[in-house]
Length: 188
Image 1 (cartoon, rainbow, N blue to C red):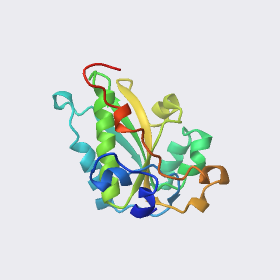
Image 2 (image 1 turned 180 degrees about the vertical axis):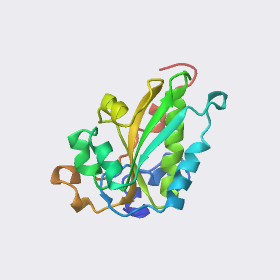
Image 3 (image 1 turned 90 degrees about the horizontal axis):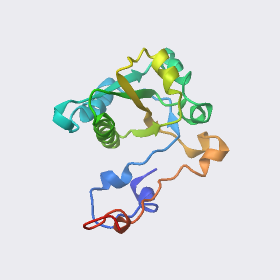
Image 4 (image 1 turned 120 degrees about the horizontal axis):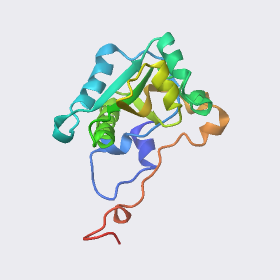
């Protein structure tokens, strides 16, 4: 989907860089390999995310080969697997439990990753629908790490490639007005 098409669905209340508006989470991916240098730039952006006490609690486990992706497919719920199976890169974001800000900091790293992906011509889609305990077992994730989210990364495919019931949802979502998000002084 091109910038002008995205802007039909998303209008900011205040002028901001189009990068933020153009970031959305499509489900249709094509099985086109992401070059190493492009993918590493995406993760390099995540590396530079701010974190409490510079602890950088996030870690990413990647799947790029068919064999590695098959391991990830084993713990992703079937409904999500219907659309993410074509993504050439899957990742699981984990974070060190010893840092009480691990979820917040990891979310920031995910945000940086998703924005750099847009700059690289890629799309990302965070996946919450997966069996975290099976992922822990299959990927050998130590108990001292929280499992945050899985992420599909790749080049956007055509809407028609999705199962029919997903096609209607393959649009950028809007956001609530800023006046419903900010409260002056105290909550309402």
